[in-house]
Image 1 (cartoon, rainbow, N blue to C red):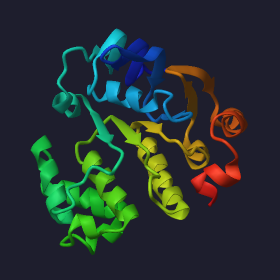
Image 2 (image 1 turned 90 degrees about the vertical axis):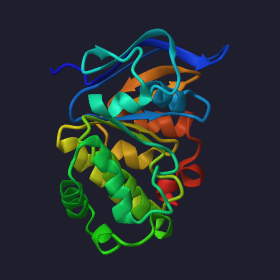
Image 3 (image 1 turned 120 degrees about the vertical axis):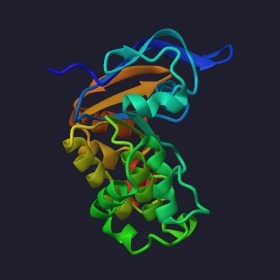
Image 4 (image 1 turned 90 degrees about the horizontal axis):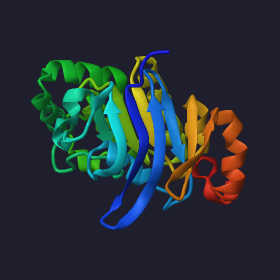
Length: 242
């Protein structure tokens, strides 16, 4: 098996004197879609913040492609191939679609290359290139956010609550695109409160409770356990079925 692109080894972290993560171990290889799931307050978002270098780890090791990220500034992560789509999409709503894509040329990629890739993957954005990003539908805004992230040619993509505020059919379509991205060899770490759709495209899943990954394995094996023990009744709490 290839070496992990992203690796957390016995990572503990928190906010000031408040500990949140307790010895987290996690590894992503090229082409993985790892679904990190569980109840609110379990530590999922904190895990992403560790990977984004927004908070420091207190103990343990965080590596990208075998290199320790200790001392690496958050804005330098794109240079090692890691990019994040944060909760709330991460676009500039007062700029047009095209201007949002122009912002990604700072990574050294030509605008023409970014636009070609974006409009091939998301053809509906091509007809909206002059439209203000804030006036796009929620799904289109997520498409733009994904395009901005992919414009840096990442090896690792972190997704935080991709489904937030979106209709189930849109979420399903977006996760099919996530699957295509992984097929290109990009490793994807997904944090989701509502699990059914992401379990359908992921090849690994972990249940995080009280700052620890208490169960890890095949998504199909974990689905029933997640629904029953952590996410509540499917018919009320899983937006993918509403």
